[in-house]
Length: 494
Ligand code: ATR
Image (tube, rainbow, N blue to C red):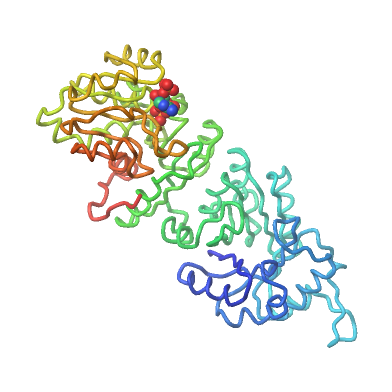
């Protein structure tokens, strides 16, 4: 189940949020602490106006909410509002039973909040929040909360892959607790929100407003990741990196799986330890994954087999499980060459100027070298250019001398990160004069058009963007992952 967290300041606003997201969600959580005071007074009417099960929550500031009423008043307000037609009410784990007895003018004796709610068929969610960490006794905490017959909810903050492993182990460790809610907040936790069923969680929260750290929108959770339809047979794929959440690869693979009706999902994993990730990969039986910066070298000791390109470039961006062994390939290499294939086949490219001497540049230079193209590498730090040129049997020069190559090469490849955030609008070779005859190839895909790209286009060059390479390498990964060609009838939106 996907639950939409409602953070409007009025009930009307929240009704609109439900309408906008209705097709993707099973229930909604009314965050009463976001409502203005006048609206709080009439919040009990809300569930009957939205025709969807609603969780009632009045979150304290200390638990990441906005309610700063004295505790007694807060609980009294929660009690009064819970007279509405809610399906669940959220009560924090440290609220004592004795604090849940209220005077009510309708009854002579004090009313037991929990008992009266249960009588009306409402379920209680007992929630525990931790914005600092995943506590060591998390399994004990869940068992204790569950022992009272309520639905335990733990929203904790993983800070490492080891914490993520602890959260995914909950499903196995606490099988007997059938109904529970497990949430890993923050950037590390995003994989637990998408794969919430693998943590044994009955639901996952989402919002249009990032109401909690790591929330994705209901549309992304449902349409991109199909989080609520994943099952035990779903093959899990993903991408590891740090940072990783900006990556466009989920937008290539997930629509591809859906188009060929392949029961699989592709999830971003923020990783701080490659070793711990391989543990998780075994635990979740992950079938394959992409590797991005800074782990393309670090993964290699864990691979049972590597291809010739991985060995030559010293970088691996694609890993698949084959007969219980990890096999590493490099689709950047072929993805880079794909847009150039007709020029290569017709022998139109003899020489290339490659700007930059980092990891991306190494893959590009080897690919060009292997196709018989003469490469000159230019770089800000001349020692890096020299070392890479020595390794790849190329020549090298300084950035300042770039114009020596103007009109003299068939291809110019820009491999540095100059032009993407935080270097937006910059160009590593601002003085380079394009003759218009060379092909200009930019590896950056965000933004779509850099200063380098625009200048080449204006000069009349054929230009190739990083987006093309990204899609090509992604399609090859898809083939490695699934054994099927990428569906030709869809165009990934990156
Ligand atoms: P990647 O794996 O994306 O290639 P990298 O290995 O860190 O990343 O390499 C970054 C490349 O961009 C290097 O060639 C770097 O030049 P240096 O070797 O001098 O560091 C280049 N680069 C980064 N910032 C730059 C800048 N402001 N101007 C020019 N080149 C820059």
